[in-house]
Amino acid sequence: MKVHVDTNICAGFGVCLGLCPEVFEIHDDGYAIVLVGEVPSEYEDAVRLAVSQCPSNAISISDDSR
Image 1 (cartoon, rainbow, N blue to C red):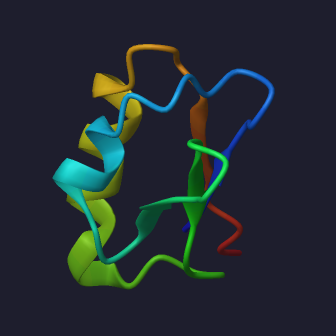
Image 2 (image 1 turned 180 degrees about the vertical axis):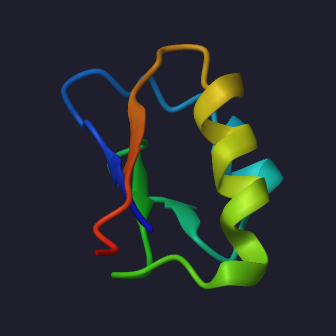
């Protein structure tokens, strides 16, 4: 699973960071960034929760498994 934060939409609420600090961080500019290329399986549920809880709907996930 990969996760992406659209920095044009992110409003820097930090909900994602609160839910999964192993995957998200608030950058110096005040917006969320993703710390990993692939989300480790143990964090997938937390990332899905972050997607659903993001107030600005700035987070998306993709599953590139074949």
